[in-house]
Length: 245
Figure 1 (cartoon, rainbow, N blue to C red):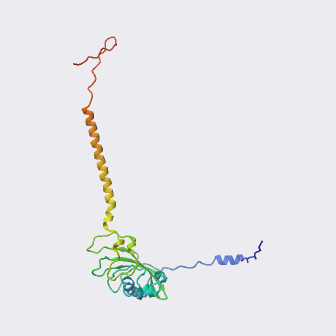
Figure 2 (figure 1 turned 45 degrees about the vertical axis):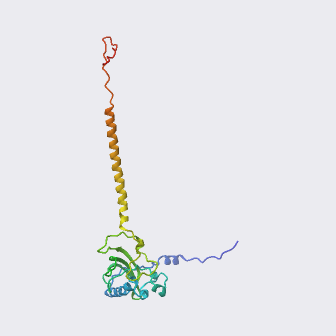
Figure 3 (figure 1 turned 120 degrees about the horizontal axis):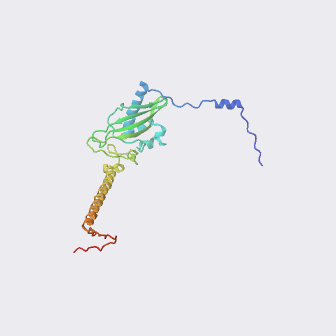
């Protein structure tokens, strides 16, 4: 049997003091100031051409948080295999964003980007999370949430895999691999199945009605003649049935 040393007991007063300590306070809501907006504009003006448009990707490394880097160093980040959706964004300034929420720690905004002329893609809406670090605004996430078809193209159904980064950096001006996109023909498959079921039900109803009418017609054609009337005598006995010639 092993004897363990007695554990020091905490006094009731110490327990009361520890239980009365307030929980760590989280970020509090805070409106963006004019200086904050200017700083965010500067971050986006440098980040979009570098990380989103894939021009000098290494320049955007210092504009990101460790969460977005996902363990990559500057050299790995500069190769372009990063967690940012590539897009041929038009313009040099990207100040047309709207605020969803802002706190003392960061901000969550939405930014609509338009494609450059000749790109075979439509506008795209991004949800962006930014963190305030030592007076600077760093990009914590940059995720597409809605896409719009080009003006000269038909609408398309897109899966969530279309927004994932590819295996390597895409060539500038080249659209992402369309292999993961679903053609608009797939959208009509459920309607085609429903139409086939409705046609089958209508055909079955027509066949059933034709069968009932045929049975009814055959029944009338082979109807038996009526039985001859019976004559009853006065004494109550039946007379023989008179045979008709």
